Image (cartoon, rainbow, N blue to C red; front, top):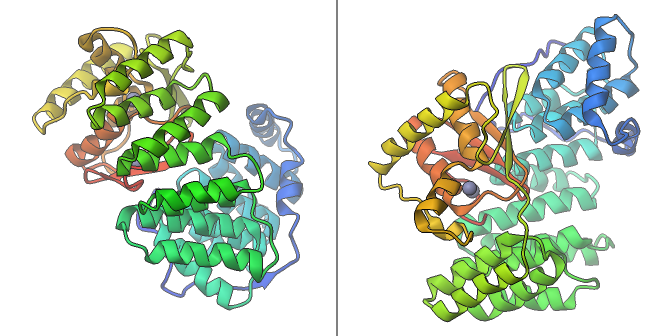
Length: 440
Ligand SMILES: [Zn+2]
Ligand SMILES: [Zn+2]
């Protein structure tokens, strides 16, 4: 079997029927086993592995799949490739646990074609393997491919499990958002009902969350709210957050207020919710309410977690805080950022200061937004990576509206593919568009 790690490839598609279901129930516990090595400090596990590898230590398949899970948690592409090469040399790739963990890491790190290559070479696949592959498509925003694979796999009798349904519902929600049509809303409802009525599975909070997305994103906000009211447990912040995002897109102030009220209670420290509600009021020219929201934000002294982004260049992870001063090449980075912004202004970019609720003048807000960590990471990626390589950034908070516009425009001007993974989702920016359909 020859399956060496490959470089970045950007057109991973399912549907050519090159992948056939070969289901076996033999490794349902792959996740459980893989995670048994985790002690909450994945970076230490990786460092230890690299050190032991250099010393010539022999590893079992069990250890390799566990360390791969640490790679996924740390987005450690370099170590993952090393492990892939190691597993290839040690003839471990026929092992379903190792290969499933490997494809999962590649997919989570945004290297979908590498994940597909691992998947295609697997001599057997478990339900977990299929779930990981469908989830990989979804995480990388190839929603149609995820649904195609699921439809085919489902017909062939693969177990209808909760994990795969989560991914499928997420795919339906994403496509519904982009197409603004009801076909995928109907499909999502169908799988949700089938899960309960035909497969006797109890939907968990994530399934409900996806269904709220499915309904809200096509404008069925009332129906989404009814579903929340009928849920057998309390709605989470992500469910109310999803409803609030839909209210923003479809301008539903009444339900936005209800969603925001819940969010203020559940997440008192998240300034992003105040910002979203304030933007909804502003879009509806309800200026008194805008002032009230800002006042409330100030009174509750919401403390926003400091923004931080990461980018991997060669084998090193570079992290940037908002307003970073410590990076070795920070002078060059700010100067390149200024040049990029100048270039963008020619294409109509204006700093969207409504995404910053600091109680300061607009020009100060512009400066704060201009130095958001993902912008600095992007510029560093532009400086260091070859022009054909996609730029992959991880972020510890939800991307703000201004950075979202910035990334879209940067992808257009530079012709680069930019991937930002924030706390909510992957955003794939290409040619001035983002795969999220503006539901950030
Ligand atoms: Zn930002
Ligand atoms: Zn996006």
